[in-house]
Image 1 (cartoon, rainbow, N blue to C red):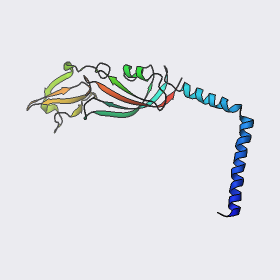
Image 2: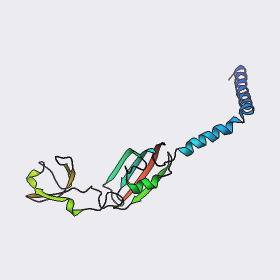
Image 3: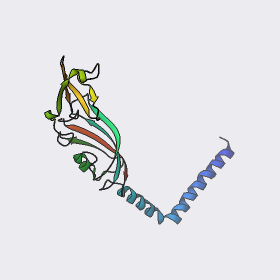
Image 4: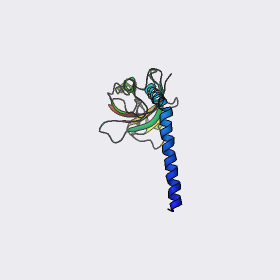
Length: 178
């Protein structure tokens, strides 16, 4: 760099330093107010009754490698649009916070109910259906093919995670308070 370039650079740095120093002396009283208002905004962004919350979650069955549900979801705190036990756990959380929540089968999808199984003729299944497939009936209900024989099939209308404990990893993405 030339001497003229160094002089020009020194002038810019000196000018910036002076602006900062002058700014501090004339705006010094306002700086804490700005910081305080930012803290209040962050403080009000925690989850309370009626908050509209956007979260990312992954739900797993402990010890299982086969079932993971991952999604981004929105809910209104207090309306029980998510599992009540999970809703209780996120109260007070702020955007960016993460938490791992363990749910018992009763707190998750409920206990497995053997009365939600239906024995039907195998001919009513779609061609090629096999054990483990999830099918949808005419009214939109989902069922898992629990068992197949030469002539019959057992459809299980329980949620695939019914009767299983869950670990739900949540990350709060956004909180809009009422």
